[in-house]
Image (cartoon, rainbow over all chains, first blue to last red; front, side, top):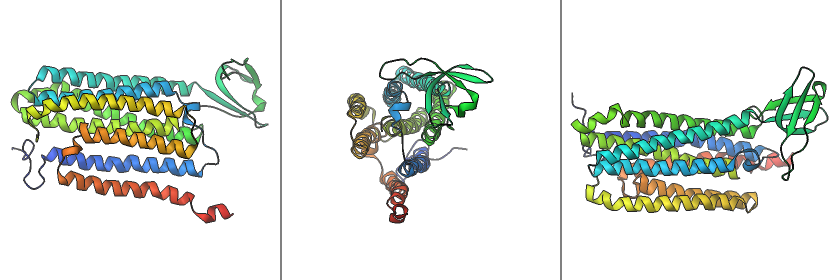
Length: 245
Length: 101
């Protein structure tokens, strides 16, 4: 059975079906991320204090990831343009680069997440808070190496367990800021993984369609690109909101 | 495929130009954060730059600059609901009762 309007535009919408479907999906995605951005605003305006993202998160790594994702958006649109110009070799090159940059984004994000899970905060019963790395964890005490302050590395601090009110790493449970950071970036990472799965399929086994139905395959790359650009768009807002403000 | 191959060739140059502008705006975003502006001004500037970048990605990479009316209609409806979502938490913060306690 021939599926209608996957190559030519429907007369009433002026679009091939997958394109309209993808845009409707993206509209629902805007509401999904919109709800979380709205949650972020609600938490931030309701909080008595809110940390600047750059005091907790790694801005240089996030800037690198921004450049990586923007570059991958360009290679994605170039892969579609290559098919439009009937150059399958260049399409493979550009989509391959898009996939590699998507993977690079995930690698950088893994380093960022890992750094949070080995970074600790200790709150003592007298209200003192020490933030740094755990040097030693024994039954009756811990040794913390506090973070550098004004370029000076403080000495390790020996803390008895009896003094500790709370000891936890910088996971989502550490603070409201880190909870919304992990929620927003985690959802975004899932979207990057989803886009990578589709792009890898279209670069590999899915590319066979080019030989039999080139127009339909080009349309597939166009809608896969629309999704990838959306993932880039979300990051364009996440970066300043979480890291710089 | 609404565009023809010849038309796409012309667009490739535009894609590269947009890419350069996006990289430049990323540098500007980070540079502005080092100015340590007040929270309100900082948010306004950062969101303004992000919106310009989003417009460039949407307009040129997603071809919204020359799209069909049905997509514009869908997006306008989405934007309206998005604005409502953003206004809800802000209106909560402006609730005078919250600050009279």
